[in-house]
Length: 206
Image (cartoon, rainbow, N blue to C red):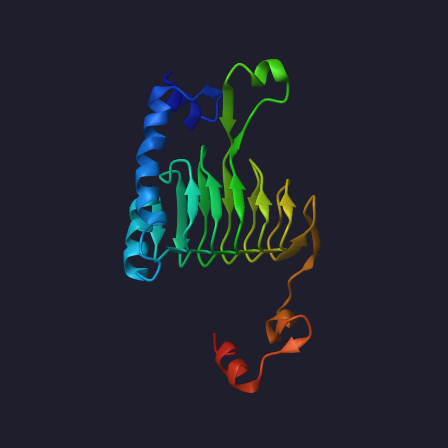
């Protein structure tokens, strides 16, 4: 097997010339994206569509960093704020209506634990999956192999090492479920602050 084939099969692989050529192609696109006119929203969105493996009305605020781009698939209305990093050695699949706050990092890449194995230059990528309607807070880190369910909120600064079930508010290092998100939460926009009647009239019709 070639090294890219080993990588894509979630096997240990070495970043040889073929692997690095794929990364070089990605970096050329990122160079254009990260140095584009920040006020050209249409132009930025067009580069995002070129970069990602799958997207539908996705928008990313530069700067943005990834290894391949083509291994990232996002659903409808994806939004990533400033300084997002996605190490997409393996597939990163993100559902509809997901938001990433500034400085979110999603890592599929890793290295062996033992120093002898690690120094062999073998590395690996394990897929990450994120469901629909997920909001990931600022400076959160998602580690290899994690699955985050639908309708989840991950608190800022969290380090997500294990799967998070649907409808969960989760936070911490390591990240853990704090409670379930319920229908009662719909009425509030921040802690105990309720939507005003004008806003609630709009929300209640959704």
